[in-house]
Length: 226
Image 1: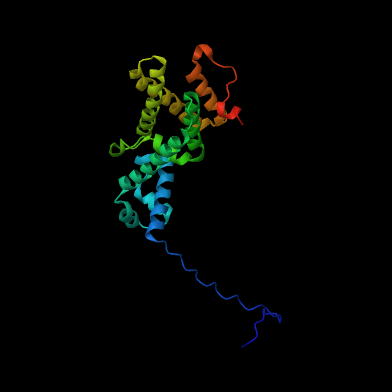
Image 2: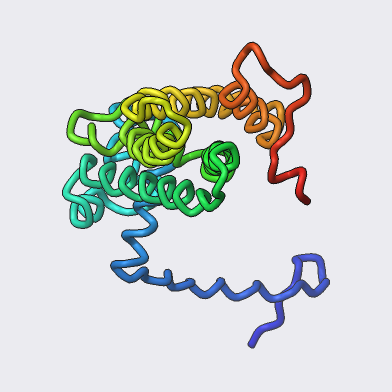
């Protein structure tokens, strides 16, 4: 093999061999589906349903449009799967949190569960509170909060009955309480101040004590026991 020189009598190193092409790891159908769901979740959170296109989903996932159609049939199908997962995740979180026997503690647990979801699953919460297409009217944040309100209604109904109040009013109060927590949660999503424990404590303070008996510096009962 002839010696390589630099043209002025010196030696120069032989050129490095070209890099070997790396083979792409092929995803299974299940893995690809999960990737597309995660991609859709992020885009729907950022842009909403109407402003998100199949082209954007495919481009961000680095696949062709037919791949998205193959898995979900279209944007509506992908959106329905994303929303259904978030609905179940939020409901499971709140239902699991409701373990206390005292109504005030139950309210604390519900508020903390919702705020915890907002903090840890911000993209999912944004998907739920954005305007959704007509086809998913039963699978949005409003419907989730209605489900939570029905659970609270049963708790309040028993409490009202034991105190001699009209149990028929439990539905009204449950909607008011859950609505207050949900609306505050939507506000806190953007400001993130104060910390969630403080927000929950003040929510419970208003709900439990009323404006005429507000505590100056409320704390959570569960926090006091630690």
